[in-house]
Length: 140
Image (cartoon, rainbow, N blue to C red; front, top):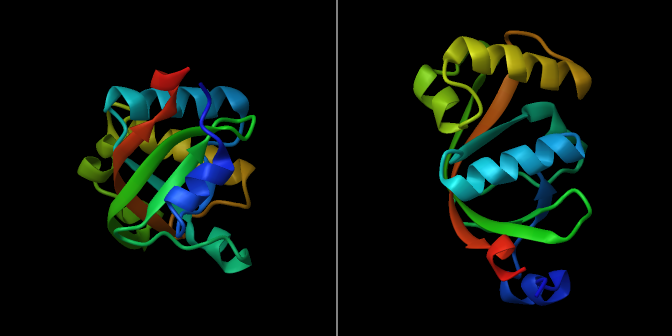
């Protein structure tokens, strides 16, 4: 049974909703990595939050959506780091679970940021470590 977003917002009143990635295929792939436990972190460009996007908060639980807008997961933010893109460490990159090296992470994320508002090596990012609280794929 699919979880109702309205009911989830009542259960998690401070939660924001978001989608991983910038396409249906990437969203599905990243959710699969979250569900497998390989992806325990994500990052965003700081400029995304200057346009009204809610800033992540340690301790807050947020609802990750499937590309079609239905609830996929609930995560809780456990760590936030603001840094330059070129200051991301290998440990940070590997926690995102998408690549097996810092260089691979840089190539993939450079492409993502270029598609979504611009890239520079010294751009500020918000890196977020999270834990998976609920997975609604198990309930389908």
